Image 1 (cartoon, helix red, strand yellow):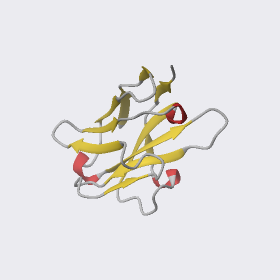
Image 2: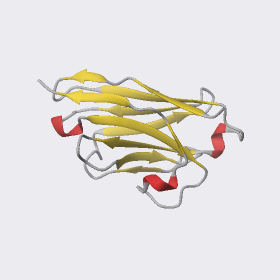
Image 3: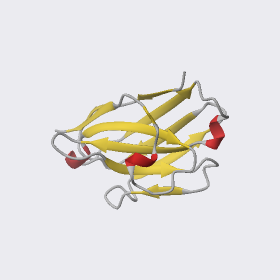
Image 4: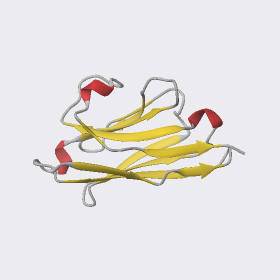
Length: 126
């Protein structure tokens, strides 16, 4: 059964860093066929795209609000995608989700992704 599990969230002070991980299992096709996206949702707000990475890892996207601070990467051997988050701000506080699909055609539309994890909480506060 296909499963995505996020980890690495927590409480961090403004300016700090966290690294999120999204571990995959149970894919019917080889993992390297899937593009992975990171999304976040803050209370009372819509889910928004944060970053995505192509199946090969050669293509990436970032929301304007995180470009230059966040870096996405993937290790297909470990079936894991990472989101390194630096210079965190209070407005980065949200539940972060990873999602997977084969060749999603529209970034950052969450409806392009079929498989979702349960999310991990990131709180940036002093």
